[in-house]
Image (cartoon, rainbow, N blue to C red; front, side, top):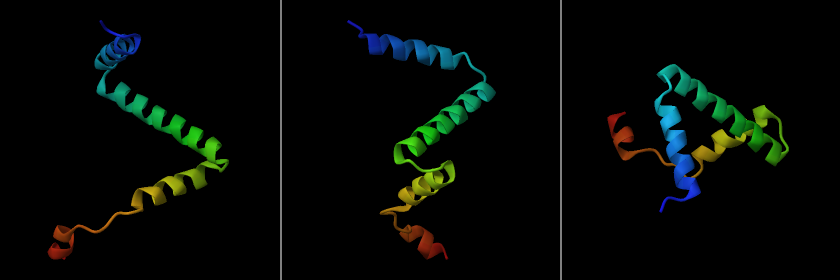
Length: 72
């Protein structure tokens, strides 16, 4: 038996499938902007600072690839 979440997921997927590529891209960018605003409010910082925090966070724990270093 499908749950309410399963049904909602299916409906959302069908809605997205009917969108053009341009509409999907616009939706993705809009969702990203919304998430950035939420993150900014949660951290009590402006949008620029929130963007910097996210960029810095993506770099934590990353190391250069051995393949990348060998190609240099």
